[in-house]
Length: 214
Image 1 (cartoon, rainbow, N blue to C red):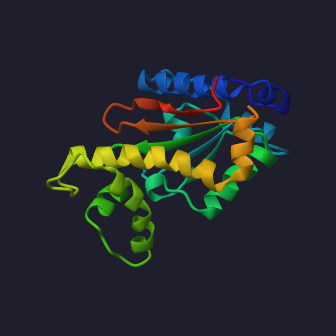
Image 2 (image 1 turned 135 degrees about the horizontal axis):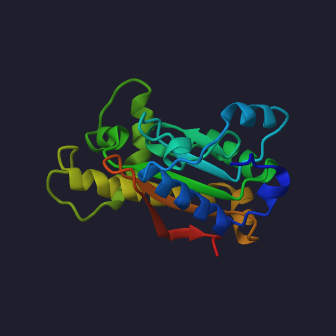
């Protein structure tokens, strides 16, 4: 697999970027990883990088974006934080990845059985984690289908909150970053949300979150 150059990356459309991630996930599920010379890719990216995607995912040890999408060195900007939440620093990182470095698609990737989501459902308070978990309140409040046992012991409730958290994050990125919103509106980049299943490795893309992907 060839290392991305500026020329090859610039030819990728947002729709093609999503397709590359879908295809990579299918390879991952079927254990058909592309043969890459990582040492060669290291050498070829030493003077510059041209990733086609920015992926916001959780710090969970099972959710490495490069692995579950079968990508190599220089292919994606990986932004990781517990619960794949959005803050000012992450928005700045995305703006760098897209506006300055040329990435074509942003993906907000949640995952099933997320410990951060479970902590938010249980209203855990623990040092600085308390502040982070409060960022899940919009998703918790938006989940209105569950009236009983709104805790981590209710797996269905947890997964509903995780899905809402992803979809609200996509919305929040566009609301809080005029730079990224303008790029989406101009067709320069696309943005989407998705969920990784830690049991089977499948990534479900939420097409109702797709913006700028045509």
